[in-house]
Length: 151
Image (cartoon, rainbow, N blue to C red; front, side, top):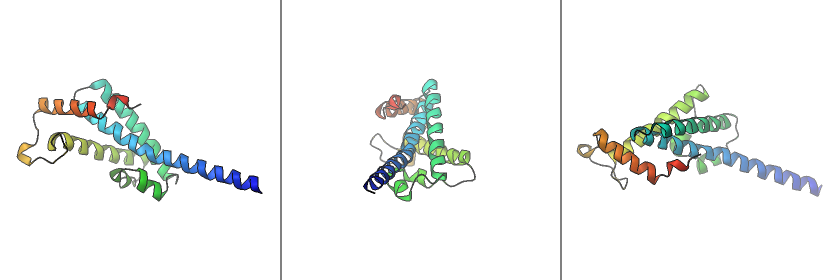
């Protein structure tokens, strides 16, 4: 009997760790799509493509795990960025991944064009519209976010 209890304990612990890791895929997807958008603005074609593939694949795995019931409400609350958690409902996995992508890309573009270097909102008359300036900001944010380390 004691062996059965120990075995069940390890099974539950292993299951919890696995579902926590599936929930954390959402963070990797966010980082990859955010860095993808920064690379796009910075005109870094190879990184843009690489990061899109990572974001797309990771977010697909995450959404599939959510749909399969492998991510609990508690894990959604503790590990999944709020924007992604609110975007997980839709008619298909591809639709939800597209919603997640659009949310992150819009947020990142606004961070580049509508916030100062400390993240404080700029007044509309100070928003960055010059492509050359946007490219420099995106390059700086790309380096600061360590985007090249995303694998």
